[in-house]
Image (cartoon, rainbow, N blue to C red):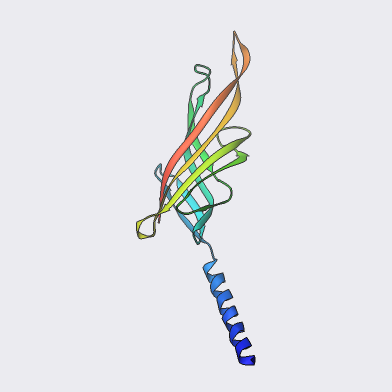
Length: 155
């Protein structure tokens, strides 16, 4: 009886130690198709803490109310994402292309590629409002629709 309990205890300790070793996360980094850096943490079949810059274009919702703008937007979706599936998530965050917080809508698709690579698509969109001024209209609001897309290959 005592030997059985000891054997079970040793097996339980070994299994717990193996689980801790497998649960450690690995930080991966690479570049996007646009040439920007990307990094994220992989823990098993899930990734989290994605950090990247995505080329983004903003166009006015009403034609002729402003000129389109472009730049890079921070891509930092909250939560974790399962490899091999697409996930959508929204978050209220600061925008690099605006002076206030906006609701960013993220879409992340990651797949395990050949030779241990990860490939995927990054998508973000949001809207913002700014003030415009003209001599005959005075001050008015301009609504902008912004979207950014990029592809990644990480080894």
